[in-house]
Amino acid sequence: MATSDNYELRDDQLPVFLINGFLEAGKTDFIKFTMAQEYFQAEGTTLLLLCEEGESEYDDATLEKYNTVKVLIEKETDFNKEYLQSLQDKYNPERIIIEWNGMWNQDDLFNGPMSEKVLAEQQNRAAEYELSMPESWAVYQIITIINGSTFDLYLNNMKSFIGQMLRSAELAIVNRCDNIPNEKLVDYRRKIKAMGQNAMIVLEDKDGEIPQDMLPEDLPYDINQQSINIKPEDYGTWFVDCMDNPERYIGKDLTFTAMVLKRKNMPANEFIPGRMAMTCCAQDMTFLGYVTKGEPAVIAPYNTRDWVKLTATVGMEVRDEYGGEGPVLSLKNIARTGAIEETVTF
Image (tube, rainbow, N blue to C red; front, side):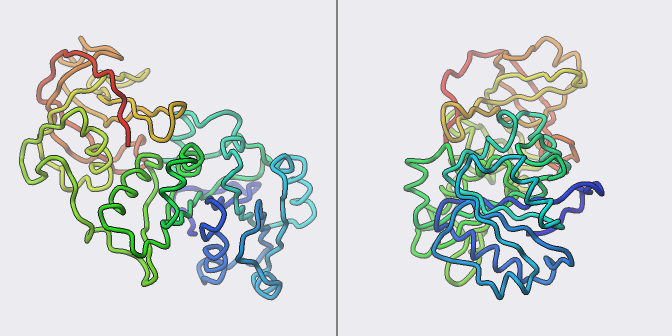
């Protein structure tokens, strides 16, 4: 866990560190390790809310050493404003760490599902969510811990819960990756990035972090070509890789088919070509696209939901949509085309 350079808390706000993951993912070990780090020390009290108990426990000596008060919340219904406010009044914490129960609906923390506005705020690291928590509690950092040895099982049976935990995560740590083939790790990385587009991904085995630049390339096109044709079935792979490794696309010409999106009050020289993607389940559809710039007269005839085939050159710009620097495409040519009925899947 770390502090943010971009998000300044108000004097009346308490930072909340939300640690996600299924039972036995390693959340407790991660929190204990972080508590011992010099950068995470604090003078005041830390309120640690445990929404489940696993094999690893917090001993009293460690809690006392780091001025931490542990409170077990056994029922999801107890996680409400009134009870949490009573804990704040009792312990007067300087910050809150929540070890979340992966089987609880994290979206219930928010009044309604994550909106585009909430996602944009999370990208800017200045999110001030409407929570089912005291108004003074501000979600400061969301970290998801994943057990690599059981990830396939959860992907097949609990994908919607994984989607909830990754949707606004800043960091996703996949531990226990020993004996997992590199090709499988590449697949895991792609799926995690699709569900948690803003998450930095760390893969770990018993020896520590796995250098991801050592993993094999599995791109369905030749990344070394100046002009790349993105087939409809490869759109998701390209989108995630361009997000992860934009530097290797800079200056290249990409041709692909996409649906037009024009947001309200968007500049006349901009639009977003993209595809609808099912990142975890049918109820969790996301529009995946990059800001594209062109001549206003060329863009004007195309409206939201029109389907086009375009060629554009990849560049990088600092944009609010990305919370910093991200890919921005420069339009070279565009033409109407038929719709692609299939959604992008991962």
